[in-house]
Image (cartoon, rainbow, N blue to C red; front, side, top):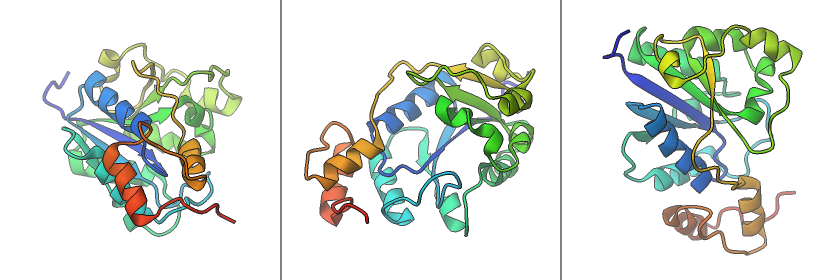
Amino acid sequence: MNNSAPRIGMLGGTFDPVHLGHLRSAVELHETLMLDRLHMIPAQQPPLRDRPQVSAQQRLALLKAGIGDTPGIIADDRELQREGPSYSVDTLIELRAEYGDQARLVMAIGYDAFLRLAQWYQPERIFALAHLVVIARPGYNDPLPAPLAELVEHRAVSNIETLMLTPCGSYTTLALPSLMAISATHIRECLHQGKSVRYLVPAPVEQAIKHHGLYQQQSE
């Protein structure tokens, strides 16, 4: 085992807007996986989702405001520099090139997203580049669809220690201590209706949303 190999995490999403659930998950991933760095990466245009309601640069600014000076967690804008859909495999290729062949590179996704993994762009290449940590979500315990079961066959490991023995290729499921049932959809609905989002988003994010008048109007 290469104990000196860096441990690098990737947590992508629309962050539309970033909220305390996202950020608390990031902190707990950083601590539980003993990461050197966790990249929070907003997507330009997620291939399997509708277009976000505010600009990519505004979402990035809110993410930076939310992270603030949290140690080991960075707002990474690399997917906003690309044209077209944001493919995780392209981001993992870049991170692997930056951190080297021996880095323990981990992509964290929610269980709901994991169930759709076989529909992603070049999903088999993800495991050639990184490990997956699947964040358990309340209410999601569906059996794996057949294409996904085939994709991840023999890749499951039971704990983080085993996962970190190699640079890539496996996955494990992780129940984070703070399961915060906060929804960006609910936050947008509150803002559309002029309701408070205090204690759903960090204070700097709330202030920036108000200052720039974001999410104020229902989209057509």
